[in-house]
Image (tube, rainbow, N blue to C red; front, side, top):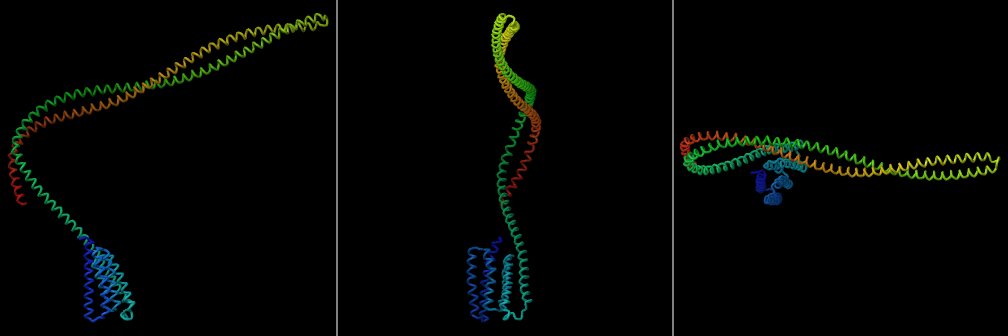
Length: 487
């Protein structure tokens, strides 16, 4: 029974106790010829309390019913005391404390102790003159202390009883679990007996066939032993072949690694060459640009040379005219006679100067013509070099594209070499694992061959043990019959 069911039962007990208390008190009041008014007050107050009890118990409000009891008893006592103030009704307060202790619930008892102390104070103050004239306040404190002490003792008892009840409930659960386990165990034992009976029948059939099977096993074991010996030879041959395969795969792996290293080196060389070709292309482009500038400068020089030639031609014309003027001046000086002699000398010097100027300008013209011719020759050669550089640039670009293709192919070769290397390593590891497995198989086969010889010897012992098993079977058969009779 759990805690709620226990409280539910105690609620019914308190309800019945309340009804019996009202009936007994009514009978005593009638016997003692108490006023009819007092009896009716008690009955009228008890009827709604009993109705509420019935409703709460029927609705299964377990905890609410308990707290209702805690308040209902002090309320009924207060109604009885108000209707008929006397020591008998005053003592009912302690009676209520005892009744509420039936719940053995700490909270209910604390609430009841507080309500009972309140009723004591109320009754004492309201009936101090009529009923408690000879009672001092010290005695009132003692009455309240009795209530508190009694409630405390009952609370401790309730707490201890509750712990004992919990332990009893736990023990009850453990007992129920043990009972259930025992029932399941007995059921399993019964099933085991049935299975043992069936197995016994099978053993009986098996023992009869064991002799024949033993003979067949002897024959089969001999064949297996011969085959195991042959398998040992075959396994050794496989082991030697796989060992050779491992060596070859190791050589292939080493060669692939070497090829991978060479491919990596080739890739580095190609990358360096491509960088150098890029540098060469850049330098050729720069040279091409410089040559274009030189051609432009030569063209400008040729144009300046042409201008100089034109200026020299102008100077020649001026020299010719100056010479002509000097000649005219000489003639006019000759005509002037003695007075024109000085002018004639000047005219003669001017003529010489004009002739010298023409001579020098002719030489400069010749030099400039040579420079112009050489400049044209240089320009022609520079133009030829410019075309050669353009061809070199084109070839450089072609070489650069070839290096890029070589680099791509080298990268592909390196990637394939790595893949082949990884696959070769996987293959090498796989063959090594296979070799280890073959070694294990060889050892297992040899062990099997040795074990088959031991089995062959053990079968002889098995044949001799069958007779002992037959005797033991008879004992098991008797035990099964006894267990079946127990059922």
